[in-house]
Image (cartoon, rainbow, N blue to C red):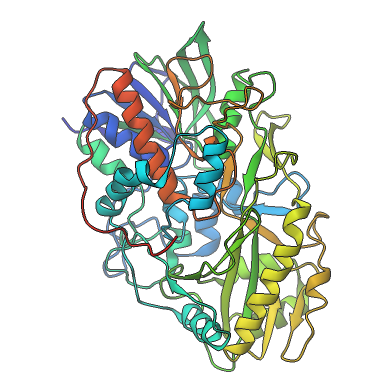
Length: 536
């Protein structure tokens, strides 16, 4: 019997539900777990704080999701945490995270890379069981189910990047993604209205609902209530379209247990509100991939908002604990303008110069390998909402500077007349410049640089060290036999690659553990074939 999606904003009464499993979060991990546990025969309930994205024909040809209108300002408010304005506590890093059905899978740029081998080696040193070999069946399941493909429709940013890399003899390669007959509208970051990106609300979640799962959107989890070594109750409330409480409550009394899949900020927040902080371990050692950004200005119009955003990259500089991946994307005017931290005439000049003729490249920086560094901490503010306290580690400063230099060189070699460096105040470099100003950028002091992150990890670690471990190797939360954590919060370091595929794969592994612990059959249905990655 098919399940349903209930929009909490429309619920007019308090409710109590008794599913087998309650999954908190509908992103990469939550969607996988919902499907696999429902396949195994369990009665599954998913709670999502953000709104539903119903399948409803829109006015544009081929539009499958009417509410996804590709208008930046509206979509940021609807689809992102804090309207895409979430910052770290000191204001130094802008944190872009999905807050809607499908979570981050709904708004990411579709890049699909496996876990970095160097990172998995480090994780094994820290007691985690994962290797590329034993993850192989789960990687195959993800690649074949979505599917993950090598999309060779390159937008202007990708073509300029390839040209500049060739001039510098830098190897580059196709970056596989989870698109299917992509229309090249470039709107991945504001939700694909055409269902051409295989996000959670297109694949995992509707498949789970078709088998009987129930999803409540607009539902914010307040706390977990336990008795001894078990969680007995999930307390939540419904919110309206402006994220205000509706005064209607939801009580969930799971028969078998709870799966936390709310992300590396959301999962620690639920645990902290529930007083399950494990003597202060929860929320500690939170990691990000700091993102450095450059925009090259070219003589001809480039249509920078269009095309497949994220399908060209180089792993040339990825090695080591502070290495980085350079990738290409697409960019829209509102996000570009907000990144400048400028206003008035200077903002108008930058947008006239750099938006219509721009091509973007950016670098994801690996962090988290230094045991002596504290990295980030998720805390609760006075309202019980999470905030991330994070400072850029000193070891990452030079690689971040050098990534900007390298990206500037690539742009200039590709024919850019100048390169805009996302810094506060803005910095422009041209052919013949020494790049000394880039190498003096202070990334540690807040608001001196414009740094983004779209990947938050850690805060609820798997780890062999008793002083750090929050989650056991079977994905159970320490001290609770029926509470599992399946999302990126379990990472002991940053990954060093776009984490979507890794989270999917670990969620499959964790779903198998849950099934086995509850005497149910777990199946992988999409095996065989080759994986679309080369040498990474």
